[in-house]
Length: 219
Image (cartoon, rainbow, N blue to C red; front, side):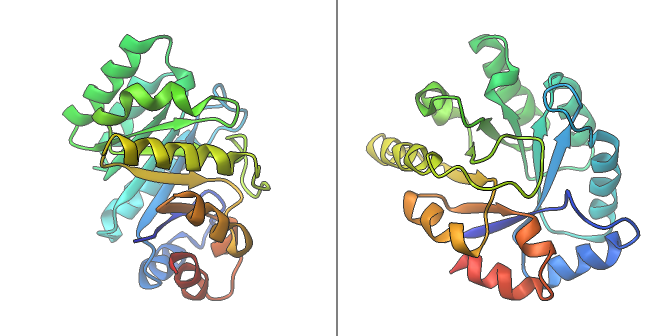
């Protein structure tokens, strides 16, 4: 089953409530919360995303999919655990060593959320393999993290396929989420490669009818 996680990064100021309600009505599976600190990536959305996620928590029962693009992972986990997200994903590249990766996995679980690990385009997929049995999702970035509306890097499709092959061979139960440049044109190839959760922001929010796009992405 294909699920859609809608990135709220480009939600128009002043239109938050109607956008969130419309997304829920259109059956998005998750609200995707892009948390950036201005250090790990250039953009800083930290406070904005804290406000948005707190607001969503009050008005919606839909699960939140929190994607941390930050250097201080532990602090961000503490801050965003307050909104009780379904899953918190951190970047492998933000960790100094294996011990820190394991520590963050356990810390997220202690807060009551599921765990995801994200990797940037230049990171080899094999680097995440040893952690897969301990997490719930692997997020493959198909653009450089930090900006919305980028074009999908097609070289990343082979990375998705390699991950899919590996988890099937080792019989690991895990979601493969893909984020970056997902639209109706690119979604088909991403799904064929093995992804089962698609993150889309611009493609959905720029549409006149969110449900049409979300339904198409889920096909």
